[in-house]
Image (cartoon, rainbow, N blue to C red):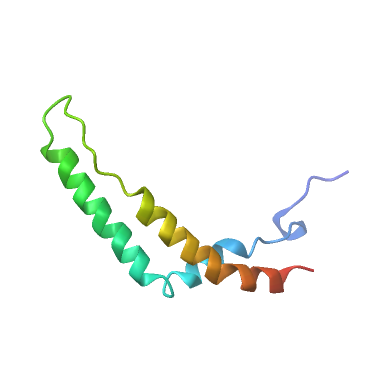
Length: 80
């Protein structure tokens, strides 16, 4: 048998659909980016060994929840 080529494989529509949903989720993306900036600044200003309590877990989950909510109906239309 011959090795499979890219033309033999299905293309996953998910990354492109998720990218298209970013404009729908700008509020969440802006909150995540602002948190990341604050956290990076806190890390840069921390003394060696000092714990930095900042994290962006909530903003990260809010952003990806928005992306998933936007992308899911579009992905299900792609299923065959």
